[in-house]
Image (tube, rainbow, N blue to C red; front, side, top):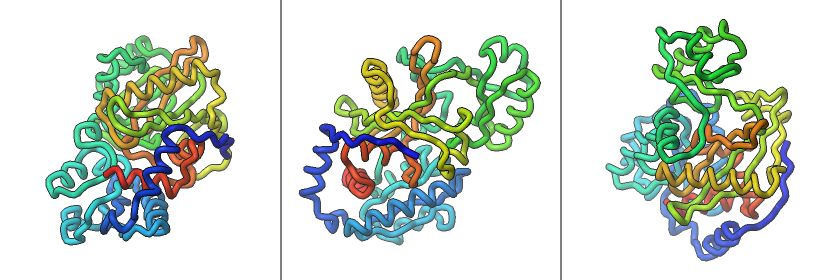
Length: 328
């Protein structure tokens, strides 16, 4: 359940102005890419159908295209004028479909090839953030031959083990003891050839959606996520009504601004554009915010967070979808 205060900001007012001058028919025939082949297929279908219905309600000539059932090269036969990418994870959020669309000269929503390829790789993302002086938890790349005791000595306990290229908490484990590490590694490795361990930051869990590009990019309202038993897993992200969301975040103004500034820096450093979402933890001991990862094709389901933040900025789900498409 969400606690949302409606506060129109400059972005929300600008969206309203831009859409008031937009004729949906001018966007042409629109493909909504959904489904796909990643472990997040189920969520992508939910996101994509939400986007599809919203566009049709706005008068857009929109059509579903499931890249998990159809060969993506068949996009040419559909004669789309532009596409809305509602794919999540590999083969949709990793730069591959973006590269294909670039070659086919079809406008698409969201970030380009390089930003998507970087953001899907959690280690590459963190290395770039570290080189830019942005706070992100310490980490290690794991393998079958890793010295588990040395990993614990470096990162401490508890720690997080997760696949490098998966999202939606798939394959993620919170490791409390040294003996739990091998099983956590095996679970993550069953989904991805690259597995990482990350120091576990204990404290408030936040997300901050971003819109725009470069120096003109803006941060939307920060959302604090309060899952039951501090377990924001796949179920509690997409299907449970037990998770609480605070928007505004409930943080003091100075800390809230620090989170937005960090999210903006993370977004700009990776070269993201149009929209994205940074996931952040705050160390309850020090008050320091830490970047976890960047999403370049965020969820658009009934439980998703970008629509929640947009609503707090005065932009409805339908207007958000139409605005994102208009930026393609």
